[in-house]
Length: 479
Image 1: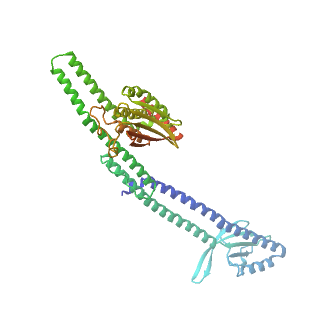
Image 2 (image 1 turned 60 degrees about the vertical axis):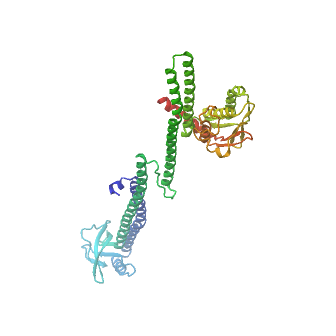
Image 3 (image 1 turned 90 degrees about the horizontal axis):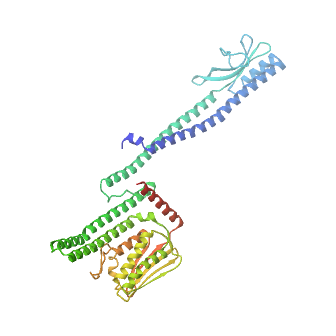
């Protein structure tokens, strides 16, 4: 894996942002600890020095020089306060009492802070120690110096600063290492998806995005992409099937149509034969157009495009309108067509495809029911569902053939004289799948019973469908 490519990942940039955040988060506590620990010690040290020098000055004013010398000498020898620094000199800076023997060079003599270095003798040699002190000139010209050895405070400052430095360095290493590892992991997952996508683009539609089973966002993304690819593959397979079906099933009618026209042209000119040939050509053309229309509507349902036109509708009203159109056809064939429409049959659906589905069911029932028979169309509602049932008294379909009869261009045990393309029940099944409805072929004893149970759909689904419809209309207008 290339390092520059790794550094360009969003995960690595996020790791750098976290590094800055962690750095700031560590500096702020350091500032707090430093100001509240070292700052407090400095303040206490300064206050102690000021209090000490004022006390000694008061001692001088009350009891005189001799008493001050004794007090300074006594405090300079105090074994419990080894960090205290005292020096009392005369006007010429000759030492009178204290625990240092030389007045600090280049230092102020009255009311100023003094910083200097002294050597403290320890086992193995002397060590330089820094001192913070304050000087005061007394009324008799003497000079008083009171200070504290601040080497421990400075050492504490160094330790805190070093601790912060090491903590920042460790944080930098850990965050940077974590960022690199996390970026490598993310990059591997993304590259796996990218490589699979590239193979799919190149034509290998059977490939699917890798899923590790961790349930993370990459797995969820891969699952959604795989579902999308399954749908795309299904649609392409359906398209190939439709194309193959068109090429296979329309070859016969077109060849027959061409043959009849050629025979009419080769025969002796006769208006009656020409008219018969033209009527036959019109009939064959109507059959071809009906197959094309059925395939187009079926492709629309199977591709999901019909879902964009879904809206709230009353299936009972749609079914009743279709029944009114087919009632004269049924009467002409000597059949009794009865519509039983219940209440509460409002649902979410595509009006055009639902009407076409009901029309196909009634058309099949009328074609295959012998004269004197009956057909019943019923629509009723249940808990969250709307049920459409078409019963006829025809020959019905054997249970062994009911799974195959919904396939395209399949006609089982029917009279060749009965017109049809074998697409009616296929279209009904496709419309049912589009509406997420159950589709069942049963026995009406005698005859066939077709039952389609639709979900009513929610208000939110209706709003989403309306929004999709508006979007589709906008795109259509723009194109």
